[in-house]
Length: 393
Image 1 (tube, rainbow, N blue to C red):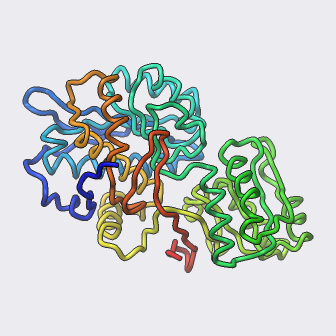
Image 2 (tube, helix red, strand yellow; image 1 turned 180 degrees about the vertical axis):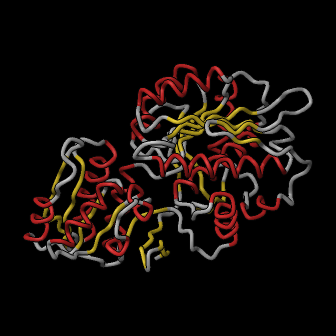
Image 3 (cartoon, one colour; image 1 turned 135 degrees about the horizontal axis):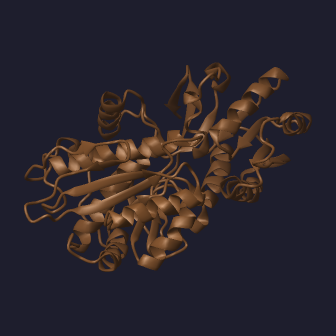
């Protein structure tokens, strides 16, 4: 595999290795579009994700972090002298609305899609990008089918990888030998992670003593699942679910005096931002993640500082995935020699090859590479909530 020079994100922050300058991007609720060159050329990158509704914490993080990356690149002269125009559309974590957002971006003449943020909408939109042969890079769509076509790639781990890596992390760090799983059987993200976790658990000396399921129509009372885990002697409860349901589980476990370890995946990121949730109940919760905001490396600290200054909060891993996604697109364009005047299909063909030839030192992994089947190679990390903040383990 051919390497391009490592892309040091901390260096990109100050843009000392790039030439030229770009005009400041303008921002609105639905779009952030940057200026073009004198001849009107620009790479038009669209984004789709929830910035309203229950999953808004994910989409807002992606929208904001991608904007930071776009601004940095444009201020440093763009991609080989060509700036980026960036526009983000809300899909409310709804597949139909995500397709509508895609069509809106097509009318805007989008050339590359950075999205969508969540899995079910991403799968729906991938049918459209396949038809149009448009390059699609989802920062956080983890379901297997998100990258089922050869034009689609992802920055995050897939659901199977999250389940396998979680079991390995728990086993290798000897966190528990008896584990219960509570999962959403109606959700492809949750059930996919659960399946691979259960399959890998025996290899790590872990006994899955209880599997408690729920559905989208029944996700407010988890007493039965928690009692099942408690009666089975589970020392750790694995939660491959989203943070909204996790807050209820933690509250109900506390009410019944059950205090196992809790371990989740990227869906738990955002739990500390839930209104009216007692954050002390999340103390000690662990989750698999490719990004820890308190990491001491220069690139992470520079990004966190910039994100806090611009948006007033600490970025989560979805933000980091999006930031890396924009820089991965930049690197793939540079590697392939693609230009903004290419057709959507020709640009896609160039980037499909280019992304498999780059190596990216990003916020979510050093030496990240991509395979032709759309998957990323990088090492997993885990964080633990300590004193109300995510702390690297």
